[in-house]
Length: 124
Image (cartoon, rainbow, N blue to C red; front, side):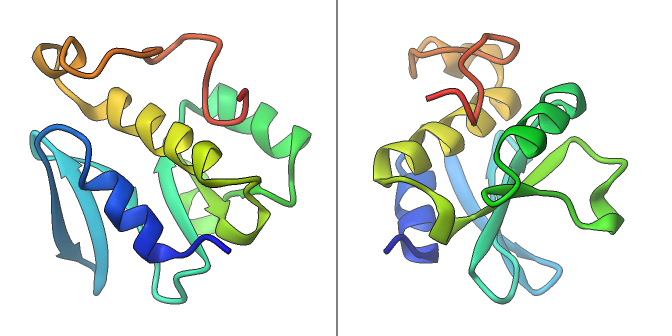
């Protein structure tokens, strides 16, 4: 089963990613922009996701994706670790969030689909 250590290991493998504690939880940032948080219970994590895509993700896979009420107005979605298919799906979701936060100079160093592509967190 996937856990928060898998999230940490994958997140820190992306170029220029650093871990920083905020709100008493681990957060991961690229070029100072946060792209992952891991809440206290460590059964889920939050990633960047455009709100229009988030609605579709939640409708398609509510057992996997959700948004707590206090994050409803933000461009974030929560992902339940236990609902993920495998490590590849986790890596794809984290990489998509990283690409949304990374500056253009880093995107060339980490090829793959970018923000706005049809290969978002729930499409692989």
